[in-house]
Length: 286
Ligand code: ZEM
Image 1 (spheres, rainbow, N blue to C red):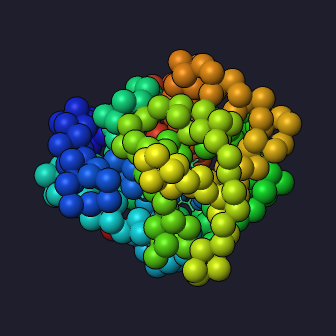
Image 2: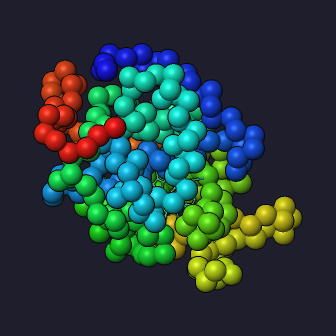
């Protein structure tokens, strides 16, 4: 077990597994980004609970949150990397995989430091319901993301991750991709939010989302109610407009906010060494 493991070698192995011709749009990248986000997005600043430390999603208490449905695919993709580099913690591996996937899909490079532990502190377990519900609106987004310590600008920047991947009816109940090329990181999500006509549609399972159908290409794109909420709220909308017209600014802000996301709840000393990894105090770990 070493903090000084060869993270470069791990990065290379993560990059190599992204190409998955049989899976979704041909890449493991989007679901790895979602794994990193859900591992960290349970954080509550007030009680200092949740967050990526501990990789609690391995266990039923957190892994069984319906919000995490489908993320076992991401964890399975990463198993060969864990087997090849057993010294890395799952908490580091999951957050690093998100960072590498974003970079490999054409996104910004994101500052990342290792040192997370796989020790699960029973007193820090996040309850279900900490992650956002796509069926809701801007009040809900603020309630969820202010809890982690993010502001309105950061909420919009983070939402730009919906440039990647898709919804699966057997995971969230929503269906479809936000953009035409969901394995390429860009600001297209923001541009489409503003430029296309989004119509509410009720799916066969009763779930409501927004869709745009393009007659020429015969493709349907989608937005969650929370995505549309970003265009309806005055404060959120100003950031959507900025990111739609300024891709570089979006990349810059996304890099900062994703780096902040995966550090939630991690305390480091001046050398970057994680200090809140007390493995001595009981509880359970891998
Ligand atoms: Zn998502 N997200 N997300 N998200 N997300 C989905 C998929 C992906 C919300 C949400 O409800 C959903 C952030 C924020 C928010 C990704 C990254 C990030 C899905 C579809 C839903 C329903 C899941 C499925 O069916 O497979 C809501 C309400 C959010 C509040 C703003 C943030 C922040 C993210 C990262 C920074 C990614 C990459 C996906 C695509 C996953 C995949 O498997 O393709």
